[in-house]
Length: 119
Image (tube, rainbow, N blue to C red; front, side):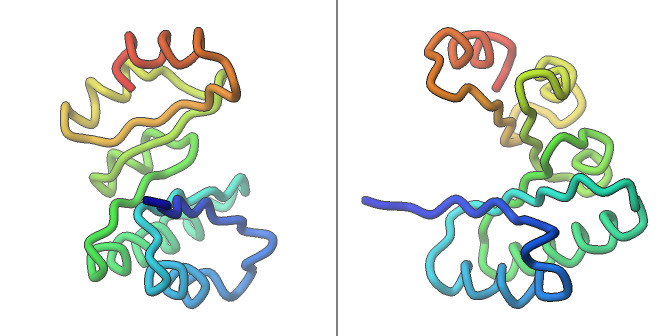
């Protein structure tokens, strides 16, 4: 079974984030990763809150890219790049049921390390 994991792009979706994500949800997306590398924290909080509400309507998990504080504030999961955060700390902060992802590229060793740390 093929499943869609959507990673948002704040530059491509400028001004169209929610409608684009909703179309992906309608199309069957099974997980949404909010990725916005801007430093505008109020914008990121506002968009993430809107995405959380939208994802809840479709019963689809939301995870936040590289921002444990925002993920904890919203009670959602997190995804870290290889050098972007502590998986063990995320597991401690977010709890055993949270989705915690890690970039592993094509490395089985990175995947094993991430799993050992709690991803």
